[in-house]
Length: 195
Image (cartoon, rainbow, N blue to C red; front, side, top):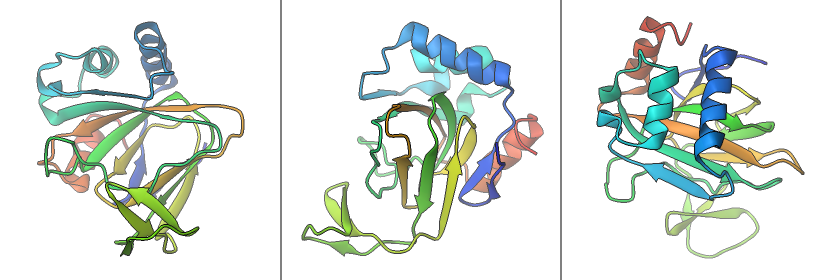
């Protein structure tokens, strides 16, 4: 496992194998990963199933730092569109997320600087939030497998499942939108979850 330290895009976290395996086991005991997307709000009060899992395995993470839990499923060989993460009922970007591997395959994440919006489909475009974005060269790409990372989802990004046979399942816990990447990383370092 290669650590990735590239603020303000991504930062590898130090959650133990016991924590990762515990989150994974509790997730599979509660949910069916064939569900395409699970999103739960009200994290600040730990009122959701995803929040209960995080609280159990990461009790030092204050519930008031967290905003939303989201599970994302990527089929073998598939990729997301270029996008920024935004709550459907808000104009506030999700900003910063801790991504926990639930069912991990080798995956590739690419970050982009403001891709050009185009309104006609062609081979070099991807659909995202009602628009097509022309794919420029990425600013940063990184591969990961079975790692927890702090990810800046307010920057345009795309995730690809590099496996041809395995489904990728990721639990993303978003920080409250008031926190920047640096502030979130500082909190995680103080808690011992990051170098």
